[in-house]
Length: 257
Image: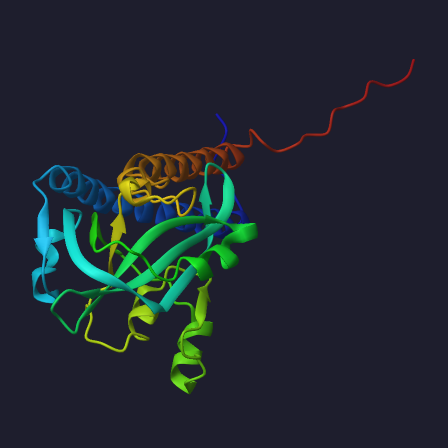
């Protein structure tokens, strides 16, 4: 019977590899649980009756993922483009505008839809304002905000020009909200407009990034399974190596006659 024998360095390498793979698997498992809860809440709430928002005080966590109706006007002085957004595989921007609520000195953000990359900046200039006064969309509160450091630094030093069309590399709602001149939400929340608000032909309004995101709970579960499987494979290789099954052995050559 083969004895289990292994030296220090393969043991250390295996332990490090296992700790990394198990950590990744655990992280993805936790993300699966969080995402599953979010998706269940989203699916439950987005089919509820339309809710009206008249003031910021109406926009509490209970309305997350709810379809809402807002009366107001788009402020053309506060328009933003979010880079690196795709639609049907094509690159482009999301057009974000500040909305002044009717009868209030308060602002909300609305995601008005997708613009193609090549003409996006020019189109956005022509779409700063809007004749619409009633907006319907889903309330979207970001789970986490990835900071756009360039914009945050510009806010700190005060280099944003009046009525500038501001471009961001990330969906940093916190930074955008920090540029608004009126009271606004304290949470990173935005109203993503439904396809009824699509232009002719742009912007293309859609709530698909909320209702059918790319990174679903099932994808996190798949990633977790992959990391755990790799950990088991590494452990099996370590055991096989220790038992001598993976070590090369010199083949004895017969004497020439």
